[in-house]
Structures are given as structure tokens and as C-alpha cells.
Length: 350
Picture 1: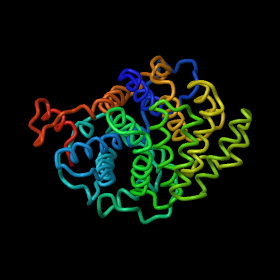
Picture 2 (picture 1 turned 120 degrees about the horizontal axis):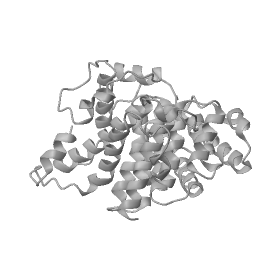
Picture 3 (picture 1 turned 90 degrees about the vertical axis):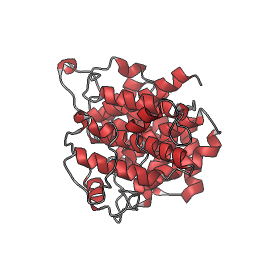
Picture 4 (picture 1 turned 180 degrees about the vertical axis):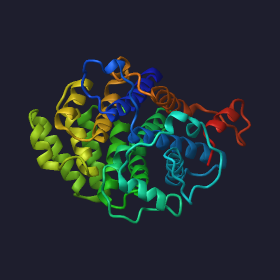
């Protein structure tokens, strides 16, 4: 895959997710003239991406395997700071560029479970003590899939990384959601994004993720929800039936299934996003559909979108480009390589 195609897919995935998160899924008069502000799913996705890159740089400098969940947990605590909330667990350290972006310092509505889990966290990367399977576990993890898709274009095979992608996203979800169904849904979604970015069509990617899901946990609530989504998508007119079959999108398995359904029963990015609007489900589902179709079709459908001037567009695009570029960054053994200081200032390895 050419670097240009990969960049378009990664940009498309993050931009599609952000536009879906706005809830502006269909064209309407006057939308272009309004000011649009990204929601919490977009904010959290950006800090997820930041955490993955920082974990990678930390591992490169220390010569150790990356510990993603501890570093992404720290990233989510920095997100708390943008919401005006202080966590006792937040370890002092270099801020990095993302926390200094003032546009991110805007309070947004977020799932209660997610917020409380971060506030109550006593150790970075620990599993949440709740039994929640809410949608907040899965909606934020697309950047994990993008991170591994970018890594894989430089080394390894898809099969080498399938379990690592799945496991990394499961552990990330466990930071805020203690229920296995939430964690399995996150693993499924991140791997789905990876496979689509690497060229698989949606049907092939879903089948491969189902196989990984069965290998990991056997038959499960997540597996059954996705199976229902596939069946109804094949009918092309199961709009009302999908919510009856899998729920309203409030749980992680339900949100995952509805997102897959919307992408699978339509033939283009805008049609898929319009299907979300017809279903009247939350913006987190719109974000996930945007992630999927962006990975499928690249950034082109979102270049001239009516909501294209939303407040975080520049930040989202910059993060996407860093997700493309990070595997090529040369740090040297001690961070002494030319240009390493600038990279480490942006993504301090902690």
C-alpha cells in the first residue's frame, strides 16, 4: 500500500469519526455557516492516539516492550485536565503538545462510568472495578487500530499482529469498563479498523474479527450482536429490526453491532452516516461509523463535508499524520538523533 493511500485512510478514519461525533450526519441548509464543536468521543480518541505514540517512543528509548495501557491511562488523565478535573493519580511529567491545545479545553458530556473510572483510578492501567459494558469502552479505540495499521506497513504480517491489536484494545477498555463484553467489543473494533486500513473489505474484516473473537472468548454477547448485524445488513432494509435485535447502542456490543450494520448495508460513506441519523442513535455510534467508512474510503468524502470546519479539524488531521509518520521517526539509542528532540517534546516518552 502506498504511503498516500495509507495517509488518506488514517485521515479519513479520524476525520470521519470526528464528523460522526458531531451528530451532523446529513446535509441541511445553513450547516456550513454554523460553528461546530467536537464532542468527548473525539477528544478521547485524540488522547488515545497520543498515548499509543508516547508508549511506542518510550519502548524505543528504553529498549523494552511497550506497555500501552499504562501510558494511555495517563493520557486519559490528561484529558481529565481539559475537562477541569484533577485526578490524584495524575503523575507529574512533560505535557506534550496535545494538552497545550486550548481548543481541547472544553467541557463535554461523557459517559458517567468512564468519567468516574478515571477520577477513581489509583494506579495507571489498572482494571476498573465496575461491571459496566457501556459504549464509552469501544467508541474511543479506533486510533489503536490505526496505530497498528501504520506499524504493519513497515514490518510484520497481519496475522502476527491480530492478537496484539485485539489484546491492546481490550486492556485499554478495561481501564474504564470492567465488563468483558465491553472489552471484547473494543478489541473487535480496533482490529476491524486495522484490517480495513490494510485493504480488507468490510465483510472480510468482520469475518476475521469474529474468528479472533471466538479464539479469544468463544461464543459471547459481542459475537451474537455482530452476527445479528451481519444478518440484518444482508437484508438491506432492517433499520427498525437492528435495534430490536441488538439494543439502542448504549452498550459496547450494541454500539459495535449498529455501527457495523450501518456501514455494511450501505454503499458509501454519506449513505452510511445517513443511516445512523435514521436510526436516531447516539453520536458515539456516528463516530464509529465515521471511523469505519473513513478507513474504507479515505478522507475524500469528508474534505468538503458541511461540517468540515469544526473546531478540532486541524488537531485531528495533525494527529492522523503523526500516526502515519511515527514508525519512520529515528530517535537514536539515547534520543540523540537529529530531530529527535522535537519528536520527544511533542510526545514525551512517559
